[in-house]
Amino acid sequence: MKKGLTIIAALACVLLALAATKPSTYDNNGLTAPVAQVNDSTKPKTASVYIPDGSILDEVIWIVGNEPIMKSDVENMRMQAEMENMKWNGDPEFLIPEQIAVQKLYLHQAEIDSIEVTDGEVQRAVEQQINEWINIIGSQEKLEEYQKKTVQQMRSDMVDDFRNQEMVQQMRQKLVEDVVATPSEVRDYFRNLPEDSIPFVPTEVEVEIITKQPRISIEEINRVKDELREYTDRVTRGESSFAVLARLYSEDPGSARQGGELGYMGRGELDPAFATVAFNLTDPKKISKIVESEFGYHIIQLVDKRGDKINVRHILKNPKVSDESMTETQHRLDSLADEIREGKFTFEQAAFYVSDDKDTRNNQGLMAYKNQMTRTITSRFRMDQLPTEIQQAVAKLEVGEISPAFQMINTKGKKVCAIVKLKSRIDAHTATITEDYQVMKDVVLGKERQKYLRHWVEEKIKRTHVWMKDRYRAGKYEYDGWVK
Image 1 (cartoon, rainbow, N blue to C red):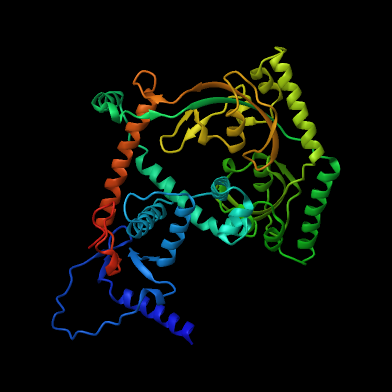
Image 2 (image 1 turned 30 degrees about the vertical axis):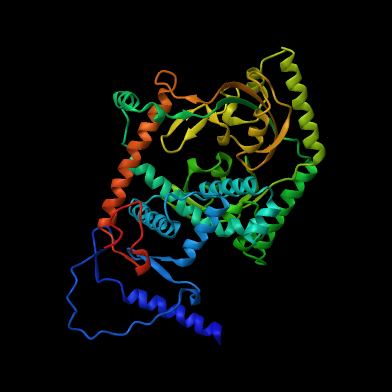
């Protein structure tokens, strides 16, 4: 009975909140904007009903345009922030719903501008976040205990949120793509900075890498292929649908929960071998032959074609690497490192001829980092920008030294063995305009882009209907204009 009353109270609160919203009309952006209010002082007043906050399971606390922000949304973000030890520059009670509201403004604009995010991008972002959480909390087991769910459940729950985050990031990049920082602006900014405000540049390193994929036995490859053939036979015989089998057995976490569906993608967004087979499919009732890509082995089913884009389902299976094969590959790389140390050939030569890492092989093993905000590419990494396994190896090296072989997961999600060489280290220091021009340029560019985005958000707020519960109207916010 008490539970029923609580639910009724929650529904009543939502209805009261919605009833309290101001009359509104649509602006040319599709969001609502407030209109002149009618003086209703002559109308009879109705008594308000007090419902204690503690009795409400969930409630609408803000409305931005036509999009509600729920109390549970705020609590979920608060929990994530606490796990990451995030510090708020103000009261999180007000700043968290504001952050969600700003995200909704960007998402609305992303829909208008037809911003698209691929499942691959979402998958990579989810995996990166989970790995960061594991590093923070200490182990996968501790993370699952803290979140009270398995890692697989976390992946499933995070997909929609991370798709939104990727769309917001791409929208922000699009908005500021024409904002630049000229050399004179950089020099003027640096010249006018007080000495105690000059940026401190953290330690940066340049790293070269050689990776080798362990040998996988023919028996293991055949086992995977036999499983994929069995899935094909089950679909052909009508025993199961491709989508159900993908949800149950595919090892692509980004698409498995979607029944293996990737969404509309261009040829260039897919692995070349995968794309060749996928774009040749014509009958949605037929399943492709087995395809080997950099990610593993697939079978593919056509969903639809639209212009130069295609939507397919796939089931991904990866052969398992044996412990013996991993150990053998580590020994081979350790022997290779010894030969390099003996001067038989250079690390750079070995990277070009031996490494399996396509991203670095043609650059003599040198790793590169792309700043997503400034879109600049550099070989200098802060330690926290390196994959965890590489961080740990580099931390023990002097410049010019080569690490012992170690195991890691590469960008394709496969177990590989690697050795790294520390090419250079630039110790932490106060920036100078001659030595750190690019750093200073990035600082100025970042400030100019933040200024532009701030102006964009505040202009968007002016054209958008915003309603909030009374307790939020007195809050201090980063952006002006929320309280109408």
